[in-house]
Length: 140
Image 1 (cartoon, rainbow, N blue to C red):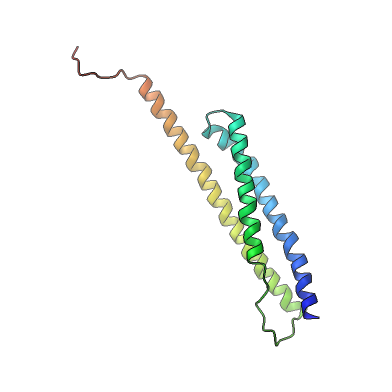
Image 2: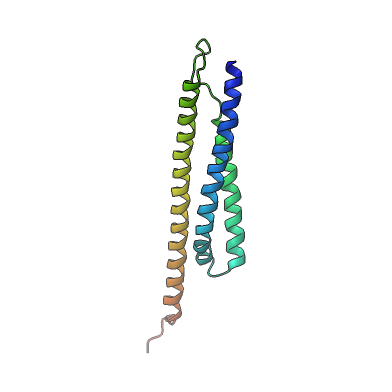
């Protein structure tokens, strides 16, 4: 009976964490597209392709982590696995994964903002250098 409850818990856990990962990924990379276009100086095809690759990486890392932490082992094998205990275990696992996804979201947002800042700085430096004449050591 206990192994049946654990299998049911897995069938509850997996769709929830995969759904959460898909939801967060879609929102992050829909919003991140404008950052990528700015980082790649308006070259939309490169920005979209890079954004898609980051999205695939996001899926692989987060779904992979969800599978790594999937094992339900927070109980003693001598104790009976009650429905209440199983719900508590699931809430802890799904809650922990949600916090992890939030941290990954903030990390990706930081990387988008950092890339945007670097792109703006590079653009500013190029505009500044265009107006300057090279100094070859000649005096006027």
